[in-house]
Length: 366
Image (cartoon, rainbow, N blue to C red; front, side, top):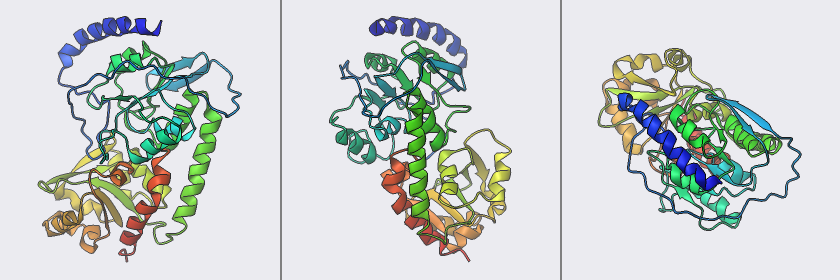
């Protein structure tokens, strides 16, 4: 029966295409790039039809069905325990894996992968530890591959952190119930991502335990860096070839919010800027860098040469944090850079390395 849904999808796709023709300038945000607040498009490739065994977990489950989950597109009802879990977009695959469940299909990682596997290291290791050597990966970073997703025959599609559009949500819902983001695209924090995705699996209680375990881990790790606590911090994106403008990630963005988990605080300047935008990032002109005088620690993607470039710039170089070098630079395109947007598995995998870099920057704050 599920294979027949492909026909439904194509019917919906055709009708939605007619609607979208008048708005063809909009790009799909099926995957948020890790370093820039603007999504890009690339060719979509098709994943093969693959039969996968259903998932099993030894955890006793007392969930009562149906389950109702509210989100930005309305409400999703799950009638019975999902056995075949599909995840799309960023980090959602790490929730079932952390809970001991093997998804039957996941989105290929579009950032931070160095080995050509299509998976970040902690995701790949989790699959292997659960006995899956060749997971199905959807090449959907520039647009969802609805046929490949349908071929995976999911019982539920997890997308609590994503950039789904209404059209994409409607098409996916023709395949299986969809757990979408709660309010806005790319603004689901890691706790909510875990709880929503786990609820969609019928494992809300297990998800809550996972959140508690991660909070305990974060508390233990941050206690080793008392110099970080209370410092103001913000996450930025700079293009070294054009410092006339740059981006600051706002409190609703997961990579920015994660800084507060690590003991830091949002500077008033960033909180004020957040009032001007409903997005996860805001573009700033270098002419307005004086508003960032209250930032103790800046985090950005780049190498040590970026700091030299920032310090040499006539405007950006006047930011106090740049002047004193209290800037955390995370090598672009690395797993650590990808973990800046935290997930259930990336937090324990990289928190030590991340805190070490932040601690070094904090030591430079007077």
